[in-house]
Length: 291
Image 1 (cartoon, rainbow, N blue to C red):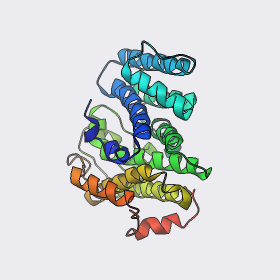
Image 2: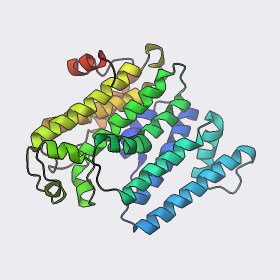
Image 3: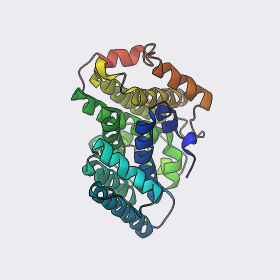
């Protein structure tokens, strides 16, 4: 597992108050542990065994609401503390695990509706858990968390087409590939054939629309408490811009932002600057009605 400092999440929650930061770190540590189970190359039976162990740890966390939590590993105790302090719903963790289990049985998605279920489970659930820690009052904040989670996961999918292909996974909806005459097997073999540039432009635009719909759902009075989420949005928006510049270059190496650029972005959002202010496209989409 890479250091937390190597992840995009680090730059979004490092400026949180200590108690909230520890809770978010505990949530993401648990999610990362589950994710590693399915992405580490373990045989499916062993990956499922690891996920089952994660489920048992959840059982201990929720049982510890009525006990001291003695005998737990430190990371499990930290998660139990976050669950107890912020009353985190168990079903969101269960849905997260169910989404990661999809990676053990599904390597293709026929439609975007199918993919949306996966995105909700592995990403939007994290957003919904996070806003419980951040605190919110406006009910539309839940829609923000769901939309932003989907947007972030779509960026992950576009960024990781090549490494996912090497694992035999293809997350781009097959209906989209047919629309642009792109052979799925050609992507899996690392030599994409067909109208790849147009396909990538289409997928980038879809991700942009989810960013815009998320922003449209974020009430002005919630922006201060949700600065950590907005830092994440800003970082991923820049990654998406880099992906768009490559167009069909999905096998040209990983897309990354420098640590300095992430720090600058985090400080800018923290100080109240709008990361989307110079983006006419997202402003236009944000003014429309969410789909």
